[in-house]
Structures are given as structure tokens and as C-alpha cells.
Length: 167
Length: 248
Image (cartoon, rainbow over all chains, first blue to last red):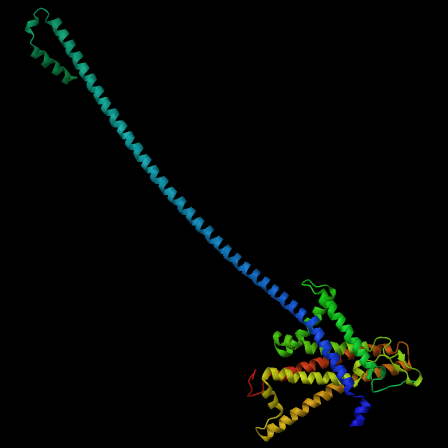
């Protein structure tokens, strides 16, 4: 066994020096390479994952905003349609009201005109009556100039009335 | 005359401490990797440069392979330092043996002349050290994961004679792992060195080139096998056996 060990060159000192060599390398690589690089890769991965999550969140938010926007547009359209319909109805109502008021005013104006016409008619009738009475009186006076006292006032009035009725 | 030595040759002393050519090369590999690590640390940035990009691709690739064995990234990151250090150390050591000058620059005179540098993995002390570290760390990780008692029960189970026998087999298999780790890497690298030396002696020009390419491939494969086996042993060891709970 010892000859095999000697032949292969196994030596405790050499073995320990190789162990120390490896241990040193492991420590140095761990401190200077593995730890910082793994940390860097982890940080970068977290950053990328964070960025992706944020992008996803932003996309979701964008969809939400789009949906909200579409809903609002739809709501506004509905509201606008409602306003238009309401306005149309109000306009029709107002039109009807105005039409009714115009008709009423027209009727009132017609009534006024008719009343004025009647008043004028009455006035002209009275004037005609008065004129007729005056003319009749003048005619009678002319006719009965010879004896004015024979003509009774009552007769005159009756004559006037009859004249008015015939007119 | 070709002089093939199974043992690493002594090149100089530091006091009473003997420095072999494989040890010296191993130290140079260590220095090279440390310089690369420090340079990488200095240039680390959120937006990577070319060097960092390559390092990140390698690291992500290694972590990806580990994920397929261990099942999740957290576990991979936990055992990554040991597995990847074994891989990179073996890989760079193997490839460093192919650098011109290694094995051909001699120190000493005449029959006492020895190569100044020698591929670290062609010295059994290097492969044995790595094997000891790998197997020891597998057991340390397993103890941390399933508990010291549960891990010890794998080897020393007095529940019944069958379990006791299985435990003994498990204990023997740990030693078998050390031996297989040691001799697989040592055998492959040493055989490669010998093959290259013979080819260079027989036909010095062009003919050794394909064999050097083969050695580049073998160097990578051996490093990968060493790292993967360590990883698989870790994965097996940290999984609780029947009747055990994690974290005991």
C-alpha cells in the first residue's frame, strides 16, 4: 500500500497545499465573483420582473381607462340623446304653447275687433238714427211747416223708431 | 529521451517545503482565476460589457444546468459556489496544461532536468484533494439539509442487520466515490499528457494538433463530469430518505 502511495506520489504536504489552493480559490471567487454577480443577476431579474409587472399593470389600467372612457362616451351619448329628445319634446310643447297663445291672441284680437266693430256699428247706427231723426224732423218740419204744433213729439219718435226698424 | 513520471516533479524548495511543478502550475491557475475574478468584480455593472457578458452567459448556463438537477434556482444558488469552482478550477487546470511551454520548459540539467510546469490534474494530489473536498462538502451539505443524525443514520443504521449492511455499503461507496473521482480525472489528464508527449516525440509537427483538440475537449468533459457528479451527489444527499424529515 505504502509503495503504491509512493509510486503515485501521494504526499500529505502536497495534498494539503492543493486543498488550501482550492479553498483560497473558492473563497476569492465567492467574494469577488459569485456573490456580486448573483446579486446583480437577481437585482436585474427583479428589475425586469418589476418592469414587466408595472407594464402589465399599466396595460390593465389602460384597458380600465379605455373601458371607463367608452362607458363615459356611451353615457354621454345617451345623455345627449336624452337631452336632444327632451329638447325636442320641450320645443314641441313650446311650439304648441306658442301656437295656442297665438291662436288665443288671434281669437282675442278677433273678439276685440268684433267688439270694436259692433261699437262702431252701434255708433254709426245711432248716428244714422240721429241723422234719420234729424232728417225726418227736418222733412216733417218742411212738410208740416204750416202747422208745426200739429205734429206731436210722440208721433215723431214713433216714426223714427219705425224708420230704424225698417233700416 | 522521453521521461514520463507518474509523480509530480520537485522544482524548488521554500525552506523545507517542496514545490512541485504541478503545484506551481496549480498556483498559477489560482492566481489567474483570482485576477479574472477581481477584474470582473471591478467591471460589474447593470449594463454589462463584453467580459461581464461572457461571464453572465457562463454563469446563467451553469445555473440553468443546476436548476435541472436541483429543481429550483434557490437551491442552485446555494450550491453553485462549490460546484462551479470545482468545474472552473479543473477546466482551467486542464486547459493550462495545453499552453505551449508547459511540460517543455525544463529546469535542472541532464538527467535531473524536469519540466517547470505540469498540468495540475496530472498530479494525483490535486485530483485527490478535489475528490476529498467534493465528498466532504456533499456530506456537510447533506447534514445541513437533513440533519446530522439523519445523515449519520445513512451510514450507521442499527435498526436491523439489513439496514446495518446497507449503511456499511453506503460508507464504502463514499470511499469509492473519492477513489473514482481521483482516478478518473487523474487517469484522463495523465493519459492525455502522455499521448501528447508521445505524439510530439514521434511527429513533432501538425500530427499532435488533432490530439491537442481532443485534449481541449477531454479537459472540458472531465471538468464537466467532476462538477456534474458533485452536483448529483449533493442533490441525492440533500433529499431526505424515507422516514426522515428535512431540517432535523
